[in-house]
Length: 183
Ligand code: SF4
Image (cartoon, rainbow, N blue to C red; front, side, top):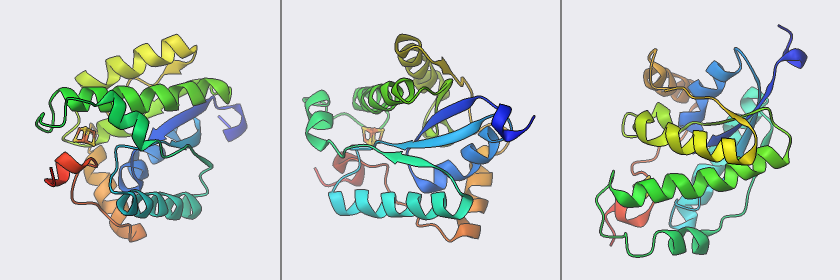
């Protein structure tokens, strides 16, 4: 299949390191366009550092990318009352939902055939939680969803290997301030 005849997938990218192996795998079957929307990443200096890392990767692998608004207020509104939840608890479900809604709506708006997310490549992010959210959002937006668990077939190990090869910054906490241990 030539690249031009492949369907277009808009993939929500959570960070550069996770995008490495997911984009590599998606490119086997799709033309890939990255969508950056991660207002969960706080403080803003950390968000900007991770975004700069994602831009670095996009430049290195010739990956088109759209950067959406850093809407921390909207993320905080959705997660109100959930800041004491442990990592992996109810706040995370709302956080996935928030980011995938915005990115999925953009996927439909840009005319992508498929919507996907890099989130499942992380060993801390269960596909059983994320993929049903992505599938529902994609269906409501009118695009197909790439229902894969990207950590399978050594996807996470490959992301570490590629991140090292590209010299990418790898963060030490998930993203929100509770996950950093500040609040
Ligand atoms: S721990 Fe990670 S996934 Fe959970 S709410 Fe915070 S940023 Fe989102």
